[in-house]
Image 1 (spheres, rainbow, N blue to C red):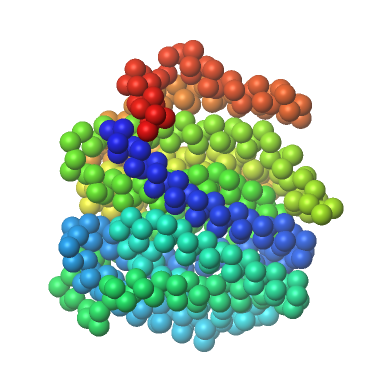
Image 2: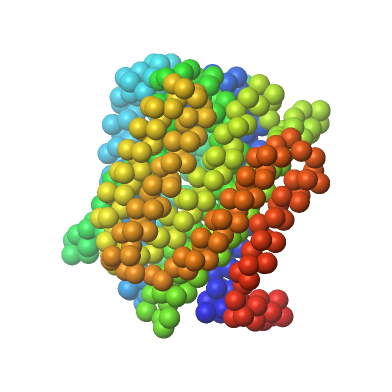
Length: 480
């Protein structure tokens, strides 16, 4: 078990390095946007990217996940699977992007952005097409455990995106349109960097026998993906409809401060899916998968507590005489702890994905994400009129919690994994106590907050949380 956990940890770190570098470079755009775009402009950009997130699910139609699932069964010759998935992605992407390009002006009006945003809509159409074509190549890198190549391409993409944003917004004064031109050129460069993968795998053939199998696995992921995207981004259009673009801009800027927790979840996710797919038949694999959840929650809960305690200090840091986030956006800082906690439940949801994926019951995800989307919309509609952007944050939290709970219950029926429920409960109780102390000490000095940060680990240690096996395993891990 410890050998496998060490392998998962190693790949998580490598993927994490790429994710950290990429996201931190991208994070640099947040203070940049807050200083070069007024809240209303940033709100429009955020809303359009929310629509992109929804449409990406249709563009990709589950082909990247289908490729990973069926390539695992064809380790010696995954080429036919790769080619069939790619040609499907190309056909769908061309059809959708042409339709969006031709209808950009009315689509912009219907989206609440105004006809003046038509140019940004056209750019978005081709950004989605290029990104969809890259997904199967990135999936191949993950299945081949080429984590460093994956990391390099992702990092170069974001570095170029940051550079072009600075050039277009600060240098050429293109305004919000510059954000989308930067993304389009970055996506094109990424596809070029992935050319060696296409050269090795892609063939001019489409398997009519294989495609129905890929479609049966991938297409049920569309409603699931739409539901997942609804949970993540539907609050922006609703908030725009019920408030204004400036409120959306402030909310989005503070929501993106949750990047630190998103990094932890993303780096785990990139390594987790190949990990459980390739170890499904190993002896004692289910116990191993159950143990991973315990460790993930321990790390993510502690990170959430740490960030919640110190995020107000982070945003006020001065860099060349400017705060990290423009003061015009500070009024939304209260959403950050709620967003961070929501990501913990999203990480649990990713853990529970192992059950339905290994059982080939991805159809279940459609119902679960539909539940999460319904919870999100309902809570948004109920709370935004009362609490504004805080209502939107709590809606996202409630949706992630609902989907995690529903997927856990569904997974127990189709592919039971023995999660360590007692230890998970101990983690939740310990960190709930620490969170309550943090809330009571809001505005306290650094020393008091550091003491709160140590409270949960001390409580767990005193309760004998670590087993003898874990103590021995940790000793071997640090000696290796």
